[in-house]
Image (cartoon, rainbow, N blue to C red; front, top):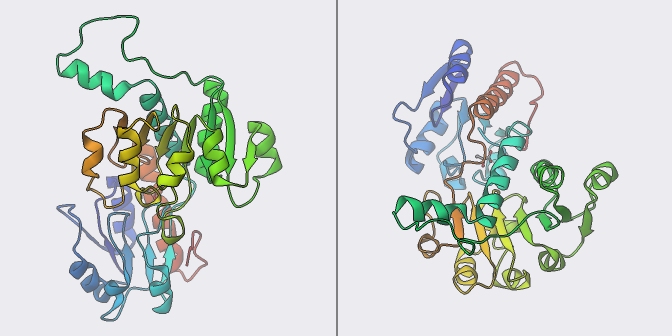
Length: 319
Ligand code: DGY
């Protein structure tokens, strides 16, 4: 069975995959073009892409040998599931193993934005720091503040646990339905069936809904206007959920206090209007980037490929 891994994985996972299958690795680790992906569809049985590969309908246009797309990552909005289904291709992802790492980055952004850590580091490295003074780079405390989660899946819950148990924050959330009573009790979480009501009640808003057509620009100018002028927006989910022109405008005019972003609509492009603003922390999609997590993601993708090779049910099938 021929397997294409589109980007380099941790060495031990690549080795484990190579011991079992005929694997082609992307030596230089550069993003593949759409033409290369389309060609690969005819040359391999299994494609293992990442969020940086756009698996759109055109990639399937010239016929497909590929029978499984085993995505290295939990989000799959970069894969056209309907087109894959039409070709009879199964799609899997890697849920669960990157929950803690991503929640850690949500808290990193929240702390950095609230305590103006990025601004401080830039000031210090630029030689502009003039010493301690009582009014220097004053941020916002977390204790007692409301963390409003948009979406209440695994990563949202892990973020809420850190915020409540670690920093004494209060938890509120918006979602299609209320979360498990046990989790609601543990977090003393308040449910908001209306997004804008949650935004208006939160001091920090953290996004945890999937990307894709249903959530594109969910956080638009109106949503940003519903937030308090003292509040912060945190996004570790997908860039397309936020209208970045509206966000840059809200930040520039201090209609919200700040933001922390790990994801962007057209990565690796970062909306230019954000780059000059002091009140936004910008990270390069680091959510799952720790050694243990990246190995676990690879092992999960490998488990799906192995199940597929044996004709067994796929553990993490999404389509
Ligand atoms: C994920 O797993 O979805 C991360 O964003 C990296 O793709």
